[in-house]
Length: 309
Image (cartoon, rainbow, N blue to C red; front, top):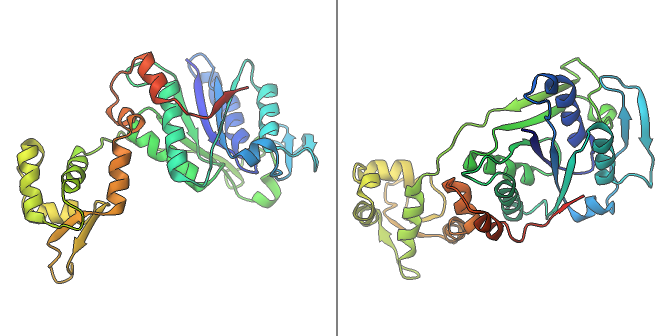
């Protein structure tokens, strides 16, 4: 089974291509059937995809060398097209998909990445291996990759490439040195994460309050124990305050924490936004990891702005 790679693209084509090149040369020979790059899903802005924003200098170098095969001059520097040309030259029968989004809007990025995961590896099915490249694109987009990987459990590998001297060597499309202090391929751990359903219950309980009303934390805990004894019955009020109310977002407090007087709570605007997120079908599907029918998957991923080249 091949691997599908998610990658954010900004003005540096090499941020996408160098990691894929490294995997082709160093890892593919010992990887299952060798198909370590079956498809690449590129997430980028309309300006980058169209070439309206010109890429930085890009050079297709020889693998692990600084000698150059091709240089893209001004007027040719469409980062997306450079990546496409490289992939089509270096990989046989590769699929390339483009997802255009606002790469500075976390909500939009998170939704697009989550829907793309559900499209290519729906829970409960064999699906595809999905790895995510964290080198290119915006921090916001890469945060969406990380969030989706940990919540879904469907992205087992996150990786990035390190280039010490970006000013001089960031132009290369392939690894240019075996010296780790100049270039390196690195991976970060993706550990299985389980969403704590107590958080959902807490937000839903606070939502029951009338606008501008408050609830004591003792009353809140009592209600939660009545709603889900198996999750809340063992909690003392000090544990509930310290480990939940003091750390979970979306909860507005009244009083002074320093004086130990933060006794009243209610749902904040952020909490309402988070609760709305938790109720979205694509988010629920990402968390629950239960099998989806083809019809459900199509309905949930509807609206994803993805195009296969």
